[in-house]
Length: 236
Length: 236
Image 1 (cartoon, rainbow over the protein chains, first blue to last red):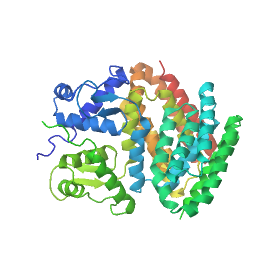
Image 2 (tube, each protein chain N blue to C red):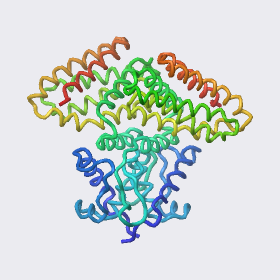
Image 3 (spheres, chains in turn yellow, cyan):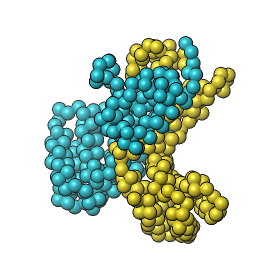
Image 4 (tube, each protein chain N blue to C red):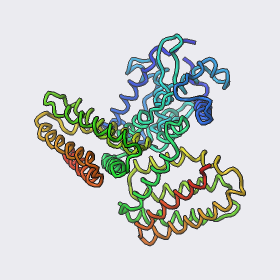
């Protein structure tokens, strides 16, 4: 099997696609040209084009589907959280980033988002309603721990989305994903989990009340307490 | 040319390497096993192994070198800013993220970092000394604009590194890179650049004085004014 003849050839395609996105020649929802067309246009191999598309996929810039036909191929999406999340998780794993730094960053982003005046009042009301539903679902004693963590994450990400900043939202989402495995590993059995989940439910309700009544200062303060308290339970 | 038989086969390798990093079986500076060994271990093609390594490279988790010999192959590094930066830039280009959101995030991260008590006083002093040198270099009237932007970015990233949080530092660095091209495009000629650079130099010096005298509240306030002022110049 030949080794890759030009290890960075895919960069040419990444840069061209970035330029096309910026100029508006490519828009969200558009389909990328086919492999063959991209390879000919940039004078590189089809293998290098595939490399570039795979990287765009991992970064959440395109969605690829397998198979052939008119709906196959790569479509431009924008899912910033996906790409950032995978990179952050790997850097946490390699100890380039410590859990303390993640917790500090979560507090920074969530309390900032809580204190911002919502950019869109109707959307903010939607979030208040939606998170009330999530709180009720987290009350279900039959809920698996995994499912609880998933809904918990959605609760926090939704609340911070009220501030209307996609960068902050993407960073938030990636931070939560990047440490969820550590959190699960740190609370090994159901016996230690039960008293913790009781406190979490109470804290979520109090946070929700503060948001619903528009007391944003208080909401920020309670979020900080909640995050700090939880990570203290998972330290070993 | 065959199409890729298993589009997500590389995920197996990414997950295995993440697990090895987390358990400490792989450490910073270690060399990854060779392509052939990884392919056999995971029962996937060497092409899929190469895909995984390329993705790790783009994410700043490994550094690959071309050629053969004992020093070739992929070495574990941890450069969180590299991977995050490329993803953010692409999402800014696809309009998934607006420049307003980047500016807001920069202000959030930089003012937070400025107000934190430095974790390491000797390092903080090193940053004060080093940024003084950068300020002197930015005074050079012969400096190209491109070089000015590069030193300017280093100045801001160094100041925020005093807070000792690698996540915040990585986010900061990626935010700056993600918009540098927009900034350059927004100030088209030297005539419009000259009055702007004069103000930037003065602002940098005042920010540095606030840091050097330990007036962190004032440093944070001036950083916010500086960033806001600059982006107002580049709006068109």
